[in-house]
Length: 132
Image (cartoon, rainbow, N blue to C red; front, side, top):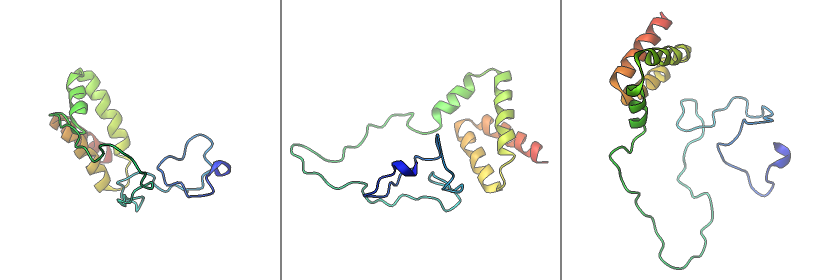
């Protein structure tokens, strides 16, 4: 809420549009990446450096075989019964078919295809059927 905003600095977060939202952003996108000229990562630090002592540095996170955004979604899809898969595909297709830009709808379908080839293929077929 504007009454609670900081006065010493501008808050630059993606956190907004929640409870008691006043509409001041007029539908501007608050996520990245997006296709509508919304926020983009700058690479600038969000805070000032602080003096520390001891061992510090950047540490590489351990890598695992399933470290991607699609493994869990694909595993869940493959666990579903055929009836559950069909309901899921129809539900998703209802919304994706209403997307106004074909490139964005196709990008969404490709994300599901990365989770499971059958998932993406069935979703694409269902979206095409709804779009006519």
